[in-house]
Structure formats: C-alpha cells, structure tokens
Image: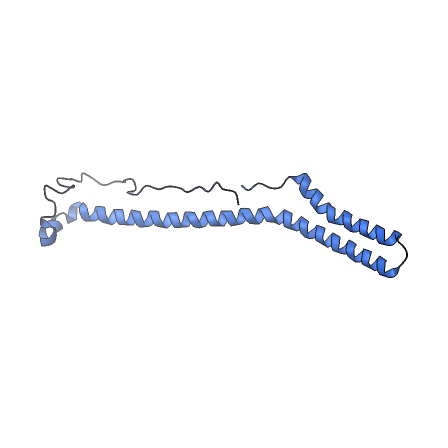
Length: 151
C-alpha cells in the first residue's frame, strides 16, 4: 500500500489558498473603496477557493487511483503467470501421455517403427515404468515477483 501524506499537512495545504485569498480580499477592501480593487480581491478569493477545492479532490482521489492502478498491474501479472502455468501443465501432460501411454494404448509404441526402439540403455528414461496415474508437481519452478519499490 502506498504511503499517504499525513492528514495534518494535507489539511493545511488545502486551507492555505483559502486563507491567502481571504487576506487578499481583506486587503483590497481596506485599501480603499476603489471598485477595481474590490473586484480584483473578489476574483482572487474565488480563485483561491477553487484551487483549495481542486487540491482537496486531488489529495483525496490520488492515493485511491494509485492503489487501483497497482492492483490492475498485479492482476495482469497474475493472469500472465496463470497462462504460463497452464501452458507448462499442458506440455507436461502431453509429454507424460507420450512417454507413458495409458494401459489400453501400450501396444501402440511397439507397433510404430519410429517408437519401437526409442528407449535404449543410454537414454535417461531407460527402464522407466509407470505403475499408475496421479498428480505430479509442475515441471517448472515458479517465482512470484514482488515489487517493493515505492512509486
């Protein structure tokens, strides 16, 4: 989770433009009764309030947006990892089915000229015997990448 700004400092940053605008309005009113100065003071006050509101909304929604974006990136990463696992598992299943066919298909390798002498004494799977069927661990080691750097 990203760290948020302390609540006290964010409140001061939001109130600061409003106080500045109020001071500008007060100065324009007390400096004389010139209409142009009064209009300028009111405009500065309105602009300061708008800036304060914009800052409040940005500070309120900024961390939520960052968290949502990080979550979307993580879910995309998990989807990619899921696809990799499915591909590796499918390859492993087809390889196991080829190397160790089910009992009703055991005569097929003996009938095929290409597979008849495929297991020689020098092969790593020489005299491998399948006793039954079951689950096996995934042939590929999985690593979960954890990004601990702060944005």
